[in-house]
Length: 178
Image (cartoon, rainbow, N blue to C red; front, side):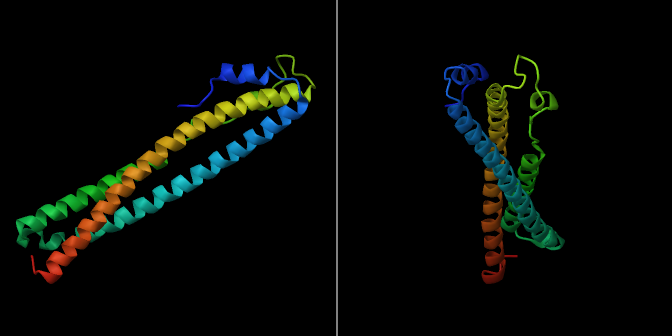
């Protein structure tokens, strides 16, 4: 991803300064970024759930009309099948987005690190945590971006299916297409 630093680049930048206040500021900023990524997970998963629900409602609407399928005009049959396919695809994409699990979080080994000469040095420990936070944030952001893309496609399928369903209702109600 453009603008992302590798772990080695982060380590180099963390080791390039000596001011303890700089470590505190970077650490605080890293915590804020992680909090934002976790909040983004919740928003994306909420949207995926709502999208799957609405797409399911559109699919139920289409299935409720299948009793008259044999007697329908060919154009209505095609429109009905297209709506069902789009709604189903919206459900699949939304559920797929929900199934992407967070790839990585902090391990106990990272959290309670005592190796590498960290000992009781608070500044070194914070620098170590900054590198760990960067890694978790980078992977979480990658997962969130993938989830968001799937949800956007699911919403596009749902929106198209909804417009076509409205057209189906209009054609059958106002123009008496059976």
